[in-house]
Amino acid sequence: MVAAGYIKTYRSNAVLTASPGQLVLMLYDGALKAMAIAREALEQPDEGDPRRIEIINHQLQKAQNIIAELQSGLNFNAGGDLSKTLFSLYDYHNRRLMEANLRKQVAPVIEVEGLVRELRNAWAEMLMKQEGTPSSGEGMRVVA
Image (cartoon, rainbow, N blue to C red; front, side, top):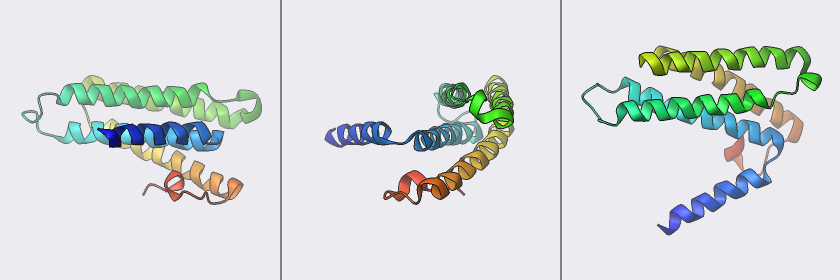
């Protein structure tokens, strides 16, 4: 498919030209998307898609990897107490997602989605104040 190639190129260019702040926003969006897919699969009946467990596992691990990337990018020298707090919060997110994956429970995913959405929206608001509204509204879309 030709369109798939264009989409891949567009995404690659978006990452390469994004500011560090926009990259963090993209990570939050990626984690939220992975958790939404996992949540939908968890809410399906067991006799639904035979790949359901595989989808849940893959998407929750993807979200955990993204959160680990956010955690590893914290600057404790510049961030001080905020960095320490975010480190602990990201650790909590990962533990809850691991629990959701092991027990195949939707409640921890819903909880972490809400917490990550709050961080994402606060980050987007900070970027809008710091950088002004970007020319492409997609990167700054606030998730409700």
